[in-house]
Length: 163
Image (tube, rainbow, N blue to C red; front, side):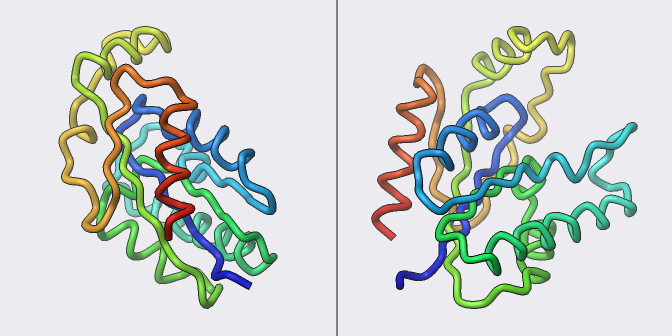
């Protein structure tokens, strides 16, 4: 049996992580999807809040559960896994063994990001902080400007299927 694959989809808010991941995981048999942002739904939100390390543990637990349950493909999207320290802490606490990690960072232009925020109804919330963070070392970077969700899914599938 081939090695299980944990596919991490990272990037700024509004680059398409959730939309792409939802379509992507349904295109594979025996797959699961976890949106890591669900584990960080707090107000006010600050990536520096030490209480959010509990959210990291929730992410590790959920991913461990999917991998230990025998899913061939586990898709994990989150804005916070752009941060090297956070990503490594989440991966370190996964209890499953013998799986490969494929990192994908989605990006777009500042103009596209602001358009998507407006379309979503996020008035005056267009921040470039996450957009300008350097992608995690080793990640495949996909620009989502002027691409359909299906086109992005197809690009990611080429990567996942080749590894």
